[in-house]
Image (spheres, rainbow, N blue to C red):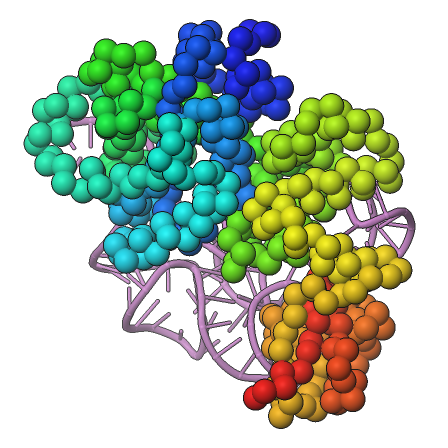
Length: 417
RNA sequence: GGACGGGUGGCCGAGCGGUUAAUGGCAGCAGACUGUAAAUCUGCCGACGAGAGUCUACGGAGGUUCGAAUCCUCCCCCUUCCA
């Protein structure tokens, strides 16, 4: 399918958001002629979503942009089942409070990226705990269980890989797709939702939902998946040394968030510009012509746009200044992540300071880094980790601690103690 | 319920009584080179400690032994096969 009638699918195709669809032609026709409502489900397993979730969030954003109604489903119900994959110790199931806390954290990101209101295209956020919690097992089996055959479930890719040689598959996991299928049916009934979107890994769950809803509601409904975004080295994107790159500000500072995008592999820049920014395609095309070190300009654009989307454009000046101070010749490093030290903690040995600030895990860690010339203070390579830092060194300008070329923290003295 | 094979550091995976904090590989971190890129090369890579060193660790609990990831007993979990 190369030409779409609907603006939505045209844009999605242009930006490589389309991986699989249950019936792309009919979906295209419907999107071209009417406004529909569609949803994506998210787990409530952490207090924030991460960069890995961002591409499907952008999908919802485009969906709303073209006048359709996005529904965000958080899996408050399905998360209650916990992570069923068998680790050494069975992980305790998450408490209801914890899940609610996670949902609150997650909603903050959506509030920035989607418009929530009561207009026809206003987004809404639903929690599947609201309808899954009260399900009676017997009723569920009788009303819905008959629509699933084990034969079919066993033949699904995601199940099959687990059965032959992979990790064991618990009955809980095996039931996830039933729960998700029921979600779709429920949203179709309550909100007239006709489309479920998601990452490519959700395909089998999505088609279960499409099947079930078609059977029971006798209305055409669709499933659409976006390719999983990997980086050029084939890894899942969004993982760094520190773990996942979070979208919530309190879990990942805007400066670090910007740096994450700025450090994108050359080969991924254009792909990311398409997926994680809303820059017009002709501008992206211009950027794609850059070569050699000029690609860095494209990375800056990517970092700016991606950061502006969730942290606001006003943070960019400070970030640019800080990046200039650290990587370039000039700039003001006031926006760098900082660490406050009480006046009575001074003087302090460098190793203690690095550990306190969180740049190093331990003094041993710092010592090893120093041996490899990986530590510097105000740009000077450190050779003696026991050196004392006195108040006049920090003074009013602070002290810049660095590990490697990219991790920096500004130490300042906390005046009111 | 029975039989067989398994459970080793973030992951994969060797080791099968002492030189084992445990070979390799991946991932990660730092250095060199660069463009805050990739590739490549070098170093680091359980925790704590300035250091000598101390502690913790090969599914769990006991035991044998001067000494156990390695042998024995019981328990838990997983794969495959049989019921």
